[in-house]
Amino acid sequence: MDNNAAEILFMGDILLHSDYNRTAREKGPDFVFEKVSSAFKGADLRFGNLETVLSRKGAPIYGKGCLAGDESYIGALKNAGFDLLSLSNNHTFDFGPSAYEEMSLNLQKAGIRTVGAGRDLEASRKMLAVTVKDLRLGFLAYSSRLNKGRNYATDTASGVAPLEEGYVLEDIRRYKKDVDHLVVSLHWGIEHSPYPTPDQISLAHKIIDNGAKIVIGHHPQILQGIERYGDGVIMYSLGNFCHSDYYWEGPQRTYQFKIKAVDREAVTARVRLSRRGIEGVDITPLCINDSGQPEICDGERSSAILKKLDERSEAIKKADFEKYWNEMIIKKRVGNPVRIWWEKGNLLYKIKNFKYSQIKTLFDLFLMFVEVRFSRTSSKWQMLNPRNDEKPRPFCGKDEEVN
Image 1 (tube, rainbow, N blue to C red):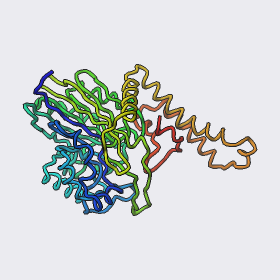
Image 2 (image 1 turned 135 degrees about the horizontal axis):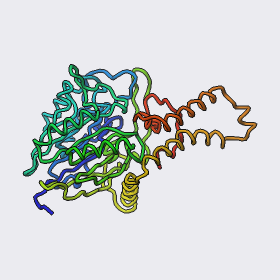
Image 3 (image 1 turned 30 degrees about the vertical axis):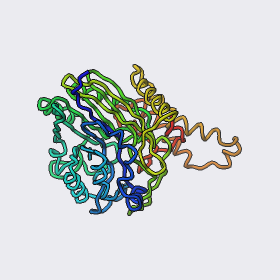
Image 4 (image 1 turned 60 degrees about the vertical axis):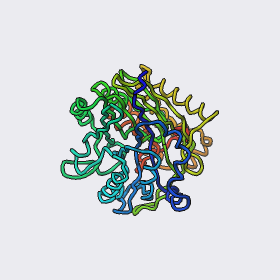
């Protein structure tokens, strides 16, 4: 082990909206991070994904659930120890370019560097270089178009860096010669899915094969697996570092949901890096308490989180993982609605309560089955997503968010 290795602490999604605004007023913004101060100690760099607009400027995007947080959390994030944040996600531009620009500027003034968004496509894809001990580290960040976000950067407009394989691999090849190690942050995947999709795994492997050392994923809201691949490490999702029940009256409709137990579970990953590469990865289980504070878990809760993480990490290594994914989607997206309908009442009840809309649902389910079996596009994986602003598919039961 290299005693001079740099320690980089990675966190999951930082969502400081809704109830956190009342907390900032009544208890002060620093209250949120009080119980994790010990977890931050000893790290040379702390990285997370900020998924809330911390600005009062701008207007909400129409037709989308938007996340707004108190501006005072910028200072609290700095006080907690955050050095670097990804802004490449589907909420950074919820209130337009003016809110993003003010938030970005205030983060920089507070001494927190950001990556993954900018005034145009080139700026959003620019590597952020950071020197830690004697290592020069490079950070890149991208957000998937499948996440129903807005404002992807173009040649002439500000936005977040789009998660497109060509862009990512091109940037890795361009920048890897300038740093000792590259870290790639990806806002991707399916909310409340316990596993990444086969397409995600394939892309993550390509990213490591092309020269990145660490892939850190965000967006699924729950824990997914961690994989040691080649000479790198892939953290598909570390869960929510901060999150609360959501309530927001948008210009189109009111958005609201209550977080579940799985939304409260997370881990931090402390990665030790030397010039030789990854010296080790230490995992610390976290849970969000009823006051919205992330805190270090112990006892049975800690053991349960680590067991869940281990099981999911092992599952993605299976040679038949893609087959498993196809079968899971068919079971939950096609089979579950049919099963739920069949188990609800006897035949007479079904006849009396028959609705013509059931024919359309059956037709939709048949189309889903065909798409899963024959589609080659990554969009088919979205059929497993129960929380989608547009909700184009029937919900398949609470087990989908827990299993």
